[in-house]
Length: 101
Image (cartoon, rainbow, N blue to C red; front, side, top):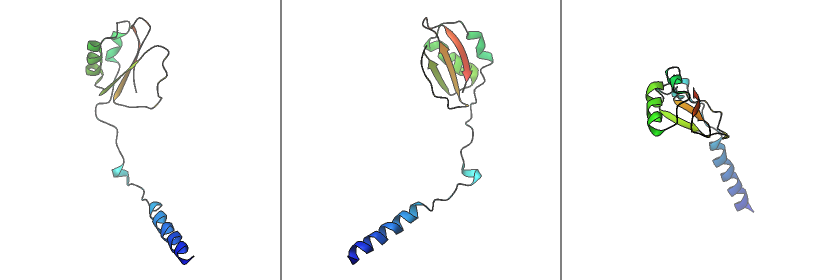
């Protein structure tokens, strides 16, 4: 059984190395992405039909990097992304909500 004890000790040493992860310094943590969304100017598009061309315009007007279309009765994640514009539309593809995040 000495071999089993040696193997168990070796495994314990290997696992101990995994638990010694260091905490990153504040300078190493990710920062907010460039291109933060501002949906104020895009509100003029409420009531318009959702199209690909309008999506490009919404990205330009809001300075967002990501466009998320939200169809009716669709669940979406609640994670906040400063670089994303979210556009909700109804069954007729009429835009009913434009927001950042």
